[in-house]
Length: 315
Ligand code: SAM
Image 1 (cartoon, rainbow, N blue to C red):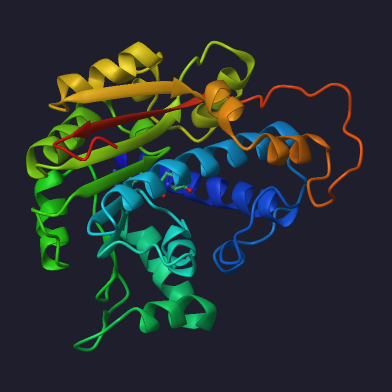
Image 2 (cartoon, rainbow, N blue to C red):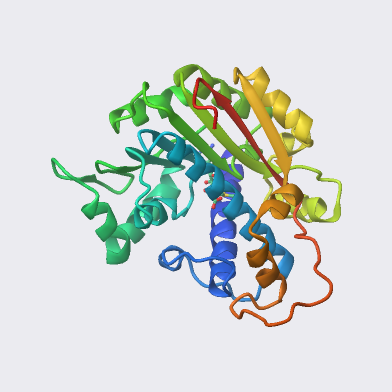
């Protein structure tokens, strides 16, 4: 595939992620009143392993984000890299946990779609207006800038352009900064993701990065993921290089981060609230069963979360 087709394939993964999340929400794995405004309902049911994998992913990433927000008492900024149709801004606002500013970055085409949804759906636009103060809110087809929330179209493989756009939208280099990459770095070559991580490490003196992506690609679920990426004609170089927890940690340390920790999703799953996990294993998480099935299986995910921190937040 040529570069444009390869990028189109990567953009398609945004739809995959949000359709799966919406399906899992619709059958009760977790609550997200906003995802319905961004994506259609899946035509077919998703396998329980997929739902449980997304449940653990969303829970794990939110847990780390909230830990950072609490540690900094929300005096911080969050940059969601490759945010797709993520709804975290709205969920944090509902919980009174908005950072000083929440930025989202994705390809301009994805951003345009997101902004179109926001403009046409009051449950999405109202919370942005409510959190906005001062001059009028800037919005066009490829970017939105309000006092607490910004979306901008940029290619994460070009950090100079990314930084310029973020600065235009009010990025503050001195605030503690949380960078989130949920299933995003895997779509870049190792060189490109290392450049992005190096840029982040050298730009923000107090920062943490949350990276969630696939490891253990040799097992059954890994193979399904690789087949899916091959069908979409995505570049697999990133998948191959960072295929273990150690290589994930090493990549972060080699890119200028002072500390790095990585855990796999089986571990995350074991740390989730167990009453909730049992409810999800009942086969029908919408209902709270009186008795649980005797065999409680594994989450069936092969993905992992890695984080790196620097400066004195110690989150
Ligand atoms: N983070 C979201 C989530 O977990 O729901 C979306 C994940 S989706 C699998 C990957 C996202 O990363 C897509 O929205 C894609 O467009 C974005 N992305 C990948 N490479 C990118 C790049 N070079 N520049 C901007 N966005 C990129």
